[in-house]
Structures are given as structure tokens and as C-alpha cells.
Amino acid sequence: MSKLPVLYSFRRCPYAIRARLAIASSGRPVELREIVLRDKAPEFLEASPTATVPCLKTGDGVIDESWDIMLWALEFADPDNWLQPERATMADMRELVLQCDGPFKSHLDRYKYDVRYEDADREEERARAGVFLCELDERLTRGPWLFGGSASLADYAILPFVRQFANADRAWFDAQNWHPLRSWLESFESSGAFQAVMPKWTKWVSGDTPVRFPA
Image 1: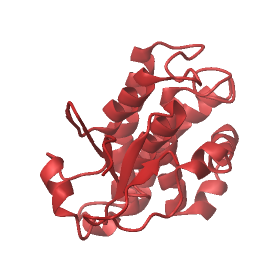
Image 2: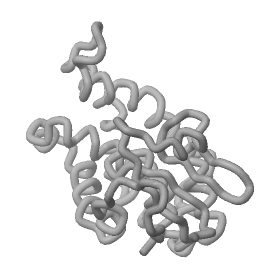
Image 3: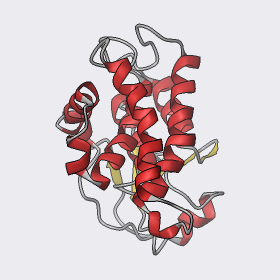
């Protein structure tokens, strides 16, 4: 039986993607358990206070927020210096990520899943989400990454959500005058870092052979 920390994850969830990116970068191994959101494993529901992915179960307890899972991994090892950007502090990165996780994510959900919200206007929500994307695009005119010449924690915490936005209507996204932003996203999507955290895992059930991640 595996004695590694257990990461409950869902392949396409942007919160889970950001957690896996940090874990893969750090090299800190976990046992990955792929969850199907429409049929959540009882062990996962027992572990997660919010019943949301990602959820990390360690010997010290449960970490149920993706940002905290990223820090847990990178505080173990940060070989790519994600925690030390050229032009920012941790507080600067956290502030930008909070904008992503707060207003931007709210508009993104109401844009992508507008039929779930009675008062949502798809084009209006897209425009409101675009305000944050314009800010990112402006930042990226100064360099290839949000806070300098190398990737930081903020980049990898935000990129999965920009990808989700783009994929809601890729033709529309690609037609926008966001050249630095689109280059940033395209570079991420074609990177080894992204490909390494996106293989297709089968749904986990109790008794399965443990899946070590990173492999």
C-alpha cells in the first residue's frame, strides 16, 4: 500500500491542473487519485471538507485549496524558482492570483456556463472577464512571463484559467488583439510542463494500484 500523500484530482479542472503543475515542478511525489465529479468516490468525500478537487491528504491533515497545495509542493523544492520572480514579491503574485480566482473566475463561469445562470448575458460576461485578460496582456508586453523573463508561481496559477476561457470559444479568443497573451498561452499549452500533467487517468476506485505522480 502506498504511504505517499494522496492527491484527489480531476484532469480538466483548472484548480487541479495548477496543483499538479506545482507538484510536478517540485518533484514531490504523491499518489494521484482521479475523481469523476458526477460520481465522487466516498473516500474523497470523506477527505475533502468542500467536496471539491484538488484535495491533498497528508500525514499532517488535509489541504483543500489549490493555492495552498502549490505552496506545499514548492516549499519542499522550487528548482525553477517559481517563488522568486524577477519583478515581484509573493504578495504581488498573490494579489494577481486573487483577481483571477475572484472576479475573473466568476465572469468566466457565467460566460462558459451561461445557461446555468438565469441573469447571465454571455457576451457581457465575456467582456467583463476580458478586462482582466487585458491587464495580463499589458503585463506580458514587458516580457514573456507575468513578472519577468522566467515563469513564476503566478503564471502557473493563472494559465489554466486563461486556457479554460480561451477554450470556451477558441475562434473568438484567437481573433482578439491579445498577441502577448495568446503567445503566453500557446507556449504553455505546447510545453512539456503542461503535457506532463495532462495524461488521461482512469477513474480511481478503492483497491486500485496506486498511481505515483509525477511518474
